[in-house]
Image (cartoon, rainbow, N blue to C red; front, side, top):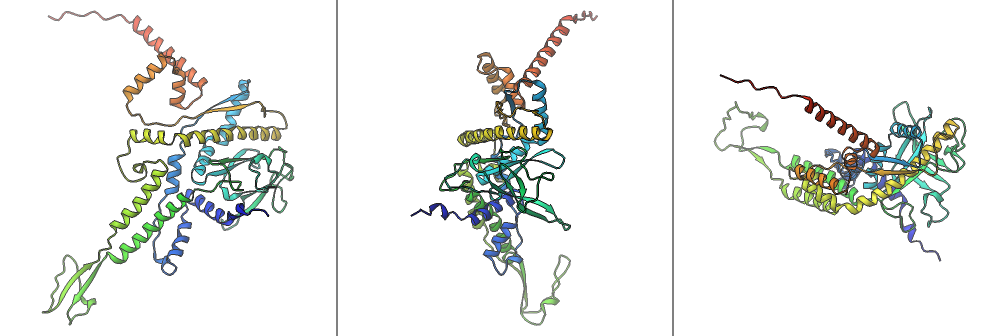
Length: 446
């Protein structure tokens, strides 16, 4: 009898949570409204939604490998003109920008896809896909390698209506064809896959797939924290509005409450036995706020993020950033490995598409390795001692000046070498100019 453990994974629930994370990442807070409807089925329409971009902020905070454009060396490309053309292609396709966004999706969803397709003009584009948009058709739940899957269903926007709404459809990808679910060609008038048997889809995972799943589970803890923040502060605003505002109270008879006029230039003439006061309730929101912030701090600490970076505080220093980076080093190395693998697959798909579109072998597909070097921005902790340490590393041979320039500016070593030569030439000119200037004679002053 077959075990049904892998079937316990509810695909619809996975898709709903993944879609909610995608919306929050794009600062669409409609999933929080749906949650408020469940919490307050009768009064939700009277509650003002207080948005909080937690998913957006935590994704930007943790996905920092592409904050500075990385250096790429196309090992195996020996022609300088070909390499220059590849770099122009990368700039036109905005590879670094799309990879930064893919890294953000990896942070909150644990996986994503990158689809490489040309538009109607033949220009190549990268499309980052949330997990709920990706549906592989597998022969067995034990298949986890994307290269072994021969058919994909990808949910994509297909057309825009006259009213501005976007209609989506499934794009079917196979080694032989690329077409919409109704058989309509995506590219020109043919459903043929021009780069077949390759399928132009790259899958990224921050964790291995287990339990028969093709993609790892999404980070439900981040989704829970996002919903808790929006719902809690929306509820808090409703509590303050209904309980903490001042209520005018008139005690004693002989006067209707509508006749009472109040204001800084108004004097109340009350009869004997009448009393007027403004009563303000105590909503006691401090404990509520403390509870919400405590929950947020616990979530952030588990992610190795200093709460000062996400909360309103001036205590987030350069030293805090250094400690954070060391705490997240293991996660950082795992991401570098996965993103580097993806970049190599993306290059091969770009080369295949370019060769197919131009119908000549423009770029080599195999035998090329994209060696990528990431350059993260780091706030200087102690500029003087860092400068001295840099000089010592250069003098002892641990790291050349060229390598340091490449890391600091986020450029390739070849570009850094040119800058280094230009700086040396400028220094030589300054020294030569200083040696040719004769000191002016001093005049005696009587």
